[in-house]
Image (cartoon, rainbow, N blue to C red; front, side, top):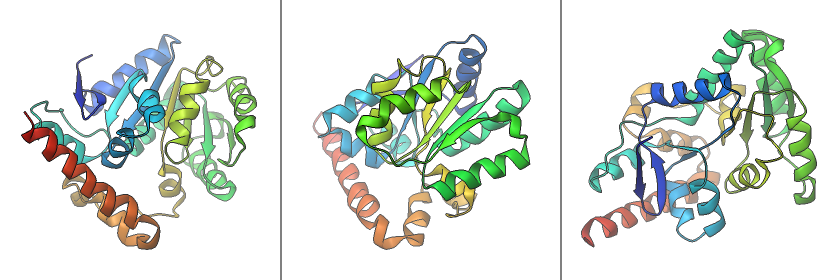
Length: 245
């Protein structure tokens, strides 16, 4: 796979369909793929959080989930084909699981949220795609037991809906214990969207890189620092990189 490196971050230069094909092939061949997505905020955090940088860059498959990252890749003369949104990838893989009789483990978010996600997907597709679920609240010393339970659940796919850097580090540090699961992926706040707690931006906003603003408008007190401060830092990093060469 073709890869680029932007601001200390490795990213696979794949389209949505190429990414899905790579994942489908791995699951069919019973190989494990550790997947991660990066956006502007995560790339900013990776400049100082070396453990997060390691957890991301040593993943098997890394996509740009954020139009700002795609724009930055062009400014830095390493153009990515397109944005690969984590939530869209997740939705496609749930449908694939239904078609191929795969099972999914849903890990993360609050108990009522993850239960609602399982309920919705069970109704939309079938309860047969559910290998198990667990909320995202746990102590560090519980991680390995949780990973073993997931591995023994019969899941082919694991979605982890926990904030960064916890989800990236959990998957990186426990991927050997999760060896029975063919595809492991962090999905951030996707469970909130699927459950209906949070609304997703209209398609035109997604395509124009304004999905972050729509999210910010729904929860300004919680999201202002992540988006306004984080995005400003990202722009500064990109410009510094561009004009330092």
